Image (cartoon, rainbow, N blue to C red; front, top):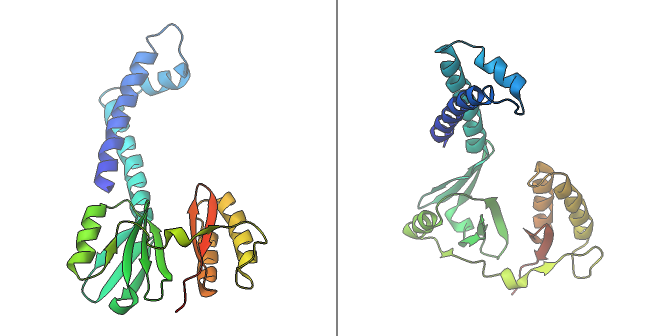
Length: 211
């Protein structure tokens, strides 16, 4: 990912120098001032500088993308999820089912509670093979999907305190999608026995069915 972004950035930097050369030949064009400033740099330093700046920006974008992307390590005795510089580790007996839910990877415990839910851009086929190859159950769709109910403020059926947490999470999500505060509130809801999923900027919830 980082190498790809660096190469793309270098290519874009080179194209910017070509675009600047073209803009200054026009009788009128937007950004002619910046274009003239760029083309005032003599060759080969103009091309070298454009490529270097583009590559540097691409490298930064690549590092950010890697930092924000989910990594998954599956072994016979544990599953490790890494994202945003931190990792979560789950023992074999904690993971009853690994699920693809849209663009998210979900891990369910033996009691039906979610123990992890993370955005995932990895190959779903490879993930399914990795989990199944180590003896974990895998599902291409959440078996509990039909149990989720759309949350509206003040609705009945929620444990004490859950409605207030969902209200706070709604505010946090509007400020920033996937914010750290939103993640913390999700964890608080899980402690109350409430599983939350998001769809089209709406919150849906369920409580695991008890035997």
